[in-house]
Image 1: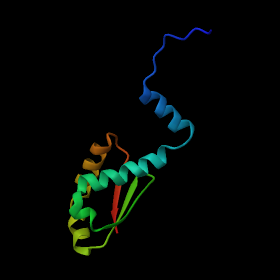
Image 2: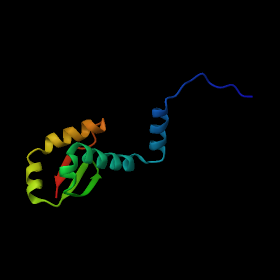
Image 3: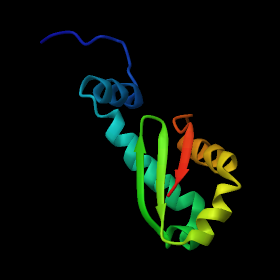
Image 4: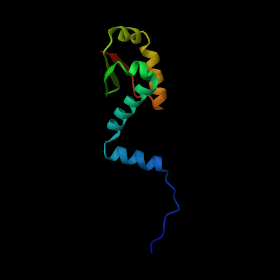
Length: 98
């Protein structure tokens, strides 16, 4: 029977290592950003959201309402900050409303 190391590794560290080794972090970020958009913006805005795409630090949101798009465009920086806060890390640097 082999001896076990007395070194403890957290599950979080193991998961992060696995995500990096298998290059899965981009996909996880995409899912997390979509969930954060729905949570932060609420059902009212999410109901008018047709598409959420996160790529290379840019969040693309396609909305079905031109009026809502115009209203949200005034608070882009605040939206980016709220989403990054919800995600727990700064991964969104730019927001495009389409």
